[in-house]
Length: 442
Image (tube, rainbow, N blue to C red; front, top):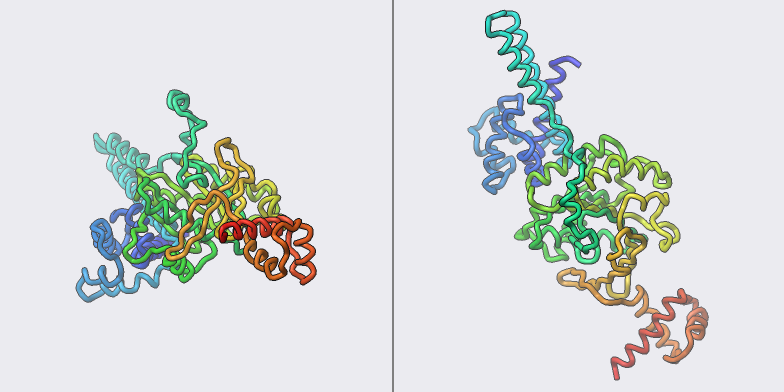
């Protein structure tokens, strides 16, 4: 590719990065964290970047109106107003900044090499030393090795830690620094619970930053759910980095793993002293391979999962249940090999319950139950709850005047007689529910 073509592509990436910064607060944070003015080739781009970083650092509004007002009417101001159109998708801000950085690095290398060749041609007495200095500048501009490779154990710290100690980022559900899978049948509420936990952690007192990768919802869905939870314009959700319909590339490929890693670098750059939690909603939409193939999830672990573990991040992937939900997640049995905790989520009469399907730690509870309350929408821990549909079946049995002390077999026969047959466990729960309700009324 020609130099002119390279510069053209770099200019596109610069415009896209600036357009993303003007269109979205989270994208602006990524652009400001990863770029400097020297990374921009275009003079107008450098001039626009300066007020963006200045206003962002001061906590001011960053958009095409506020930044455009920094310039007199003319070419640069007109360009500011055209930048959002140059940004195909704000969720790709990390990709745009990576391209800008790479183009800037190539330009610097070219300048150093040209200067070294010029000095070589002059053959002055101090030429060799100055040539070596230029070569050293090139070496200094080579990217540092990926920090994920720093995996050597510090033995004193290793033995001083109590590895059996319970440590949660969300009580009894998300273990610090561990991988989790939460799976459920259709419309059971796994995404709603995940969003509630994410927002709670991001607004809580503990130093936690959450990166939520949402492959399913729309902005309207997100607005409704957060509003139901009591969040609004005055809520500080700055520690919730929410990527809606991200296009990092499939997370079971090198490109997708690299793109997510750069995105998380930017998130952690903004919150360097905070523990990182990553939620993938829903994993099937984030992969290129077949769900029934174990290779798909081995690749996910190779390119994404192991990087999250090396970061020390807590991570969660949401998934769908198979035909028999009690037997596990949909697709390959290899899905559970890379996570430390697998939860099976089920709706209950008043909320949801998380049944432990598999764990590597002895201290993870067998079951965690939450009551779902309204106004605002909140998940409250419960000791126990009834299976979903218990109240409905109990009311039907009341109408049928089935005696409270009747055996379950009698109740099941009565229900089948009016084409209202139910599972044995639900009928048993409904009979017990009726007896406890009667005692409460006495």
